Image (cartoon, rainbow, N blue to C red; front, side, top):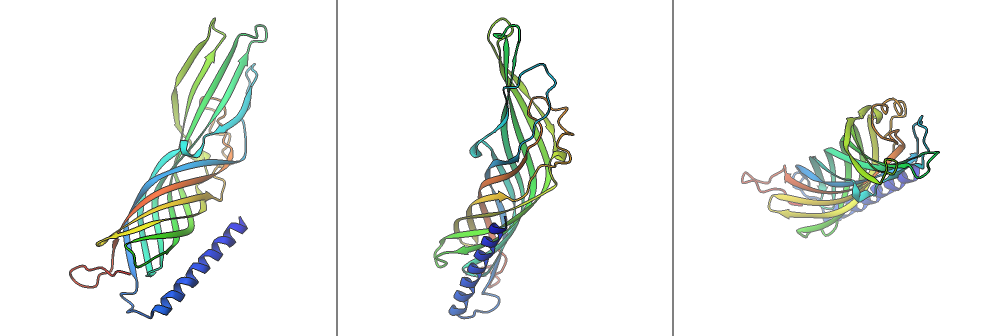
Length: 289
């Protein structure tokens, strides 16, 4: 973790040094026209991957043999969600933007657990069950980012960016569905039970944080600026509340309900629609950097 913070700090310093040097060489503008503020809407989609730190399991009191208690976590692109929020951006000069957003952010991740029972007297009589667990978390997140723009004279400008985010948990929910094959009822019977859903907010920590980095394109169309971003997000903190790990699982159907310690890794794609807040004249001609 310390290496990650050191790397991000070095990148911040390098970007700032380059931009201030370029701005100095170009000469000073008036204080009003040398910068711009933007405000707008941000929305997009994201894909999450749970990264287990330590795995936990509940006890089973059934006269059964558990074939596999390991949680099989789903791949990143099986966990699609959406996010929406407001963002403000300050451009102290043409090459660099500083942005702060408030985003209503949904994460989801899931895993499967298997359960097997076999009759000791008649081994051909057995039951195989699979439980599909889907978790959905909603946070209010505040990402703070610095962005470096390439080719500032062009209408379409590529950029790279990095920053940090801090999130406040608003809600956590879970659904469990059950499917299986019954070999013990006189034949082979395949079945699928309806999903059971419940809220599990207390099973998660109230806050989480991490860093993000990525890039994208900025396009200016008149007074409207459109920005497309693709970012990788990595959580630095365990999102599971270890104090309530076992307290909220008794009323949840299925096997494998005890929360693992885990972090969240995320890929997000966002579109921002930004409007300038500083204008040069009464006819609303904006400051263009």
